[in-house]
Length: 547
Image 1 (cartoon, one colour):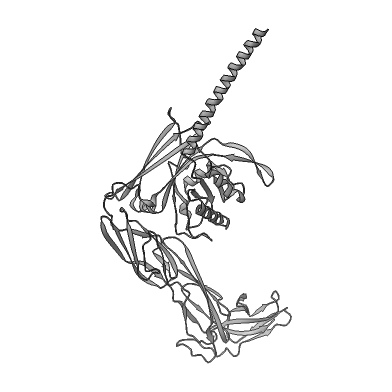
Image 2 (image 1 turned 90 degrees about the horizontal axis):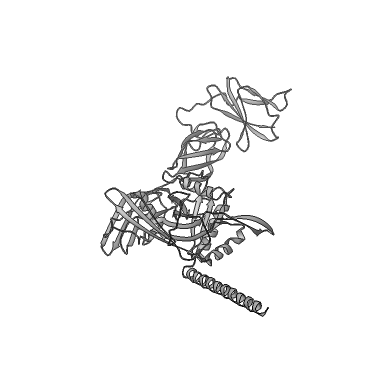
C-alpha cells in the first residue's frame, strides 16, 4: 500500500513538474510576446467617417475629429463621402467609397463613424474609444515605403508603394486584408459650417475591398503596388495627400456592449495596424536631383470680390523655400506652401512664385492669372423720375450670371434677366430689390447677393416724358365704379377698347388678371387695392379702390 502511495506521489510530482514547466514556457512566451508588442505599440488609430453634406451633423463630427487630432496627432482619418448630390463635392463620391460602405453592412445613415473597425456607439464614447485604441498593443508590424518618379517627358508621374507585413508575436487565427487609401486635405470646397474638406478619400488601392493577405512560414508578406497619374493630378496628390495603409481582420466578431443602459450587438472588424505616409513632405521623391521650375495651381482662379482663394505649390526640390507675390491680394506676399489670399477689389492680377533650394533660385510669374469679379447687385434705371404708367428700363451693372428683380407696387412684380422693364401706375417713391447669382466655373460654388435700393425710383405726374412715349387723353376719363348686384364687383368705364385689367394689393402682389371690364374681389380681404387698366393706344392707367 505504501508502494502504491509512493508511486502516486511520484506521478503527481511528475505531472506537477510538467504543468509548472508548461506554465513557465507559456509565461516566458507570453512575456516575450508582451515585450514584442511593447516594442511596437499601436501608436496610430484609424477613424473612418462615412458622411454627407446635407445637414449639420456631418460637419460637427468632422470638427470633433479635428479637435481629437489636436490632442492625438498620430490618429489616421479617412472620410468617405456617400451619396453626394452637391456639385461642389460630388467628385468625392466614387466606387471605392461605395465598396468600403458595403464592407460595413451596418451603415444605415450618415454620419457613421468607425474607430479601429468598431462602430461608434454614442458620441460620448468617441474619445474613450480613441484613447483605448492608442493604448492597444498589436502583434503585427506594418512597414510602408513610397517612391515617386517624375516622368517629365510623358507629363506623368509614376508611384511605387511597398508594404511589408510581419507578425512579431503569436496571435489567434485571423483572416487578414490589406487596404490602401489615398486621402486629400484642405480641399477648398465649403459645405455648411465646415470650411474645408479634410481627409477626403480620393481613391483606394487596389480598390475599396482591399487585398487578401497570406503570411508565409516566417509570418511575413510583401506587397508591391505601382500606378501613374497625369502631371496635374499627381501635383495635387503630392501636395495635399496622405497614404493610409491599414491591416484589418476580415472576420466579424460579435459581442454585446452596454448602450444607454441596455445590451446592443456590435460588429467588430478589428484594425490591427495603421501606418500613414505624408505625401506633402516630399521625402520619398526619387529621380529629382535639381530644382524643378516653379509651378502652382488654384482651384478657383475666377472669384467674386471679397472671397478667399487658396493657392497650392507644385514645385519640387530639396530643402525648398518659397516666396509668393500676390498683386492686389491680402496678404501681398507669403512663404507658406499653400497660402490663402483675399482679393477685395475687382480686376486681373498677377501671381508670382520664387523657389529657392541648394541647387539655385528660380521664379515664375503668371500675368493676369486671377480674375476678381464684381457681382454685387448694382443697377441703374432710365428714366428716373418717370410718369405714372411710363416704361422704365433697368440694367444690371454687375458681372453676375443672372439676377432676380422684385418691384413693389410695379408691373410686373417679378422679373428676370440682366435688363428688364417695369411700370409704376401711381405716384410715389418705390423700392427695387435685386438678387444676383454667380456660379464659379472651376468649383461649381454658387454665390448670391441681395440688395434693396430704398426709394430708388420716383414716379410723379410732372416728370419729363421720353421722346416717342405715348400719352392718352382718355386717362382722366377712366373710372372704376362699384357694380350693383355683384358681391365686391367693379366695372372699368372708358371710351377706348380694353386690353386687360390687373389688380394689385398694396404689398405689390397681383391678385387678379382679366380681359373683361367687370371683375370681383369677393375672395380677397378688405383693404386698399390698385387697379391697372390698359386701353388700346394708351399707357396703363392705375386707380385706387377700397374693398
